Image 1: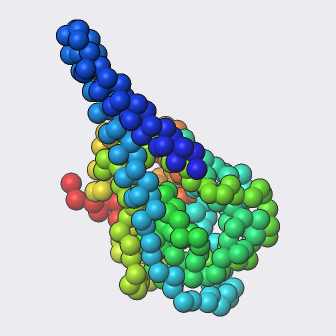
Image 2: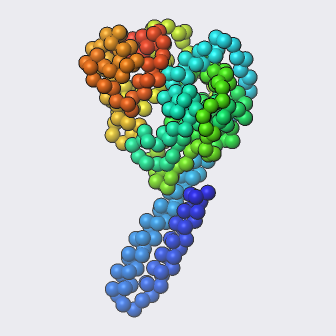
Image 3: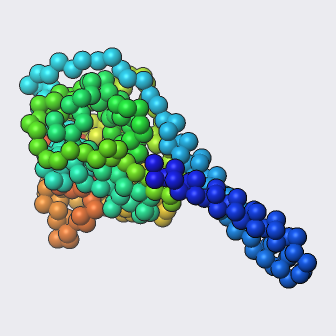
Length: 315
């Protein structure tokens, strides 16, 4: 609502500038006519352009959509255990700052550009998911659209949607098993400010990962390069470390991460220890911007799989 008010104010100011510019253009003084008229024309172009870009941003903000799959997850102890495993190593990085998946953390603090506020949802029964169907939760994870059909900005920017269908169902089973905890989630949890809307309208921000409606499968779990590649497909390492994991690039939304090829110089034991303690094999503290705490909750096979992939990266 606030953005609509600001948008209305922008176009109102643009109209006033156009009216004053017209009046100034009719002045007899050439200084007033050309100087004042030129300045007002420039201001009109700037304000009107900002209004147009904001409008385009708001249109894009409400244009994301995806179907709700017709599923009902039959929770089993094995499925819940797998879901917990994934949630600990993935979801917890954003949703567990105040308790296990209780949300409340504003992810905007992790961004390089102040484009708004994006609060991680409480995924326990205190949050909105208790009113969602399994299909609606599946859609939110896979495609970043909530039960109301609204764009979940940060969910659409991350790679959790690349989880296999079975693994998303496992996460749903685990979420359903959680006890109520924490505080309710703000409604809506996402609020893109004017800068964000202008950048979105100008095409300077991504509109989210592509919508996926087909079946997604994953490899068998094990300490293999193939399974490591799968883990890194849904983890967000590439958002910071670059698409090829060779280092982030200036201008990206996420923090700039280094080239991960240095892992080749570590042993498996050193890599596992680094992910679980936050201290690398050279004795250096790993940045808190790196979610090593959640990654370190992965089991030995998962960390070994990641190591195998990173250690075999091409030079």
